[in-house]
Picture 1 (tube, rainbow, N blue to C red):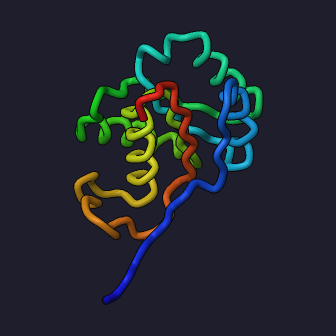
Picture 2 (picture 1 turned 180 degrees about the vertical axis):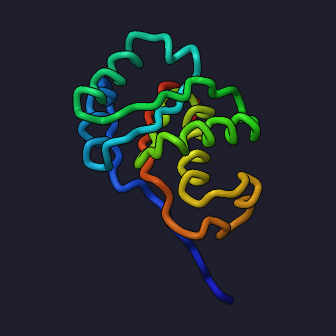
Picture 3 (picture 1 turned 180 degrees about the horizontal axis):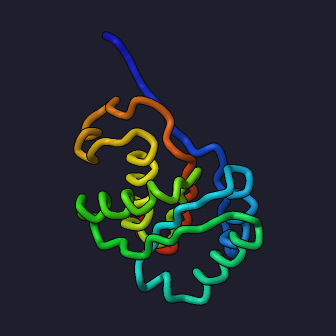
Length: 142
């Protein structure tokens, strides 16, 4: 019997109240151009505006994709990725609920390796590292 396991863990986990204030410090270690994925509701909040402003104050150029929909339809991923390619981000930040974080993961993958999302369905389909990803969950569900 052959045993095989893979453990994929984030390099860093920051946990606790107010950790969104650390996002610019973490992002500055990863690059200078961030694609930020969120939904329209969260994009309209003061908290989101503060995060974007803090990123910009840390000399990070920001492109906001605030059209994330529930359950992330594949066609919306393609639209967001196409918009981001021209911007050429060197990191992706997902802020919001599970769909926002999923969109960020999909964007990091497709910007890095191209193709269609369905090209990566199944185990071991991703050929290598993707753009660095920062996930900022704002709900307790995911």
